Length: 332
Ligand code: SF4
Ligand code: SF4
Image (cartoon, rainbow, N blue to C red; front, top):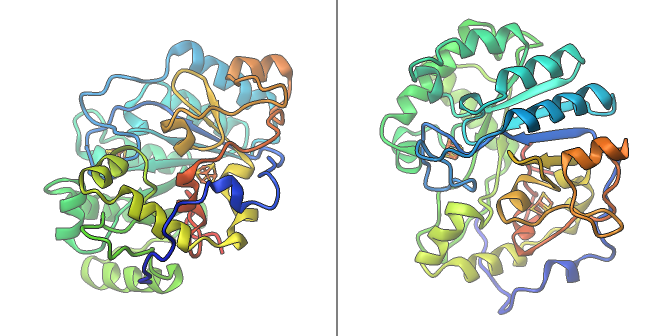
């Protein structure tokens, strides 16, 4: 979809809401295990890379294990990073979550399976029935390599074929989803992600015909002006125009479906946020007493449902523009 910015000013996101975004009963625990990654993509909101060293500590990992045991209301444990597989705590968290009957999602960059010491991953994922959500921002090699680095497309294709051989995309308990996000803009001719259903059909046709690859769902995700995307937009003097563009496409119909409504996002230090974007922008979740939350406080309180209101900021226009955007793709 191509749309032009129309509003001269960015309205504070809160002013767009008829009422505060009230947190619902928590169902999803998204854990950002750290910033270590074998790639350094130009749009990365985490600013991850191979030189980053921040990762989960054994103490926080143990608290998270307790949290998973203690709260049956958690349905999904969603592991992200960095490359979550490279950061401390990956296997203990997977195995704890699976023993407790949770769905486990790993947000995988696919190329990590070809790094020494990580070739066990595809078989490990299949053994534990982990849902793989893999970034493939385009089905054309040039575009992917420009965003993620030379050779990433070819490695991603080989990884997808490997997962297919293990039954991913074909067996009902081995789910393989792909993620599309638009190229970073070069001018004020901004784009929202295309229609998710139509793009999924195009991806499926192309990847199957050309590479014999099968997958379950395609998620279209908007680039939020956070992390490296924000830095890029600022360098190009496109940050404010991009926010205007997102605001001009604000869709209130997305508000009831935002991922921040029923998720807790945890950082490698054990601090709690409403979502991974707030985590990266250091906007922590707060209780009704205005206290900043940590995993240890959740354990001490004996409840996950202690946040009254989602903390919002201007980048929330990225989740609410057009058909909306979340870690699970379009919202409406
Ligand atoms: S976008 Fe994903 S794969 Fe790329 S650097 Fe960031 S964490 Fe790593
Ligand atoms: S960035 Fe998106 S998910 Fe996070 S608080 Fe804003 S609207 Fe919710």
